Length: 75
Image (cartoon, rainbow, N blue to C red):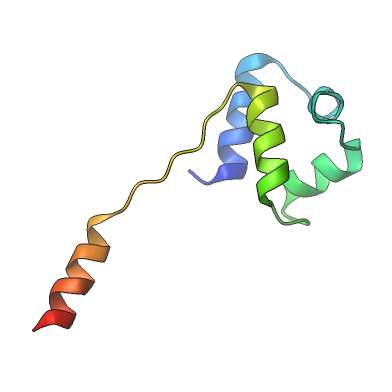
């Protein structure tokens, strides 16, 4: 699941519309709509605003692929 999909799922779970997310973040409806359609790029400030509005937390996980690449390169 990518970030946009996670936002949409959280919005659905909370019954939040694009308009209400726009109000909660102080952004315009068009800006939020463009983000969700992939017509704008997510950046740190809007990610933080959306996470706060939806009660979400972003975390990162390192996959095993990184270890495999390092192992191959060390031979």
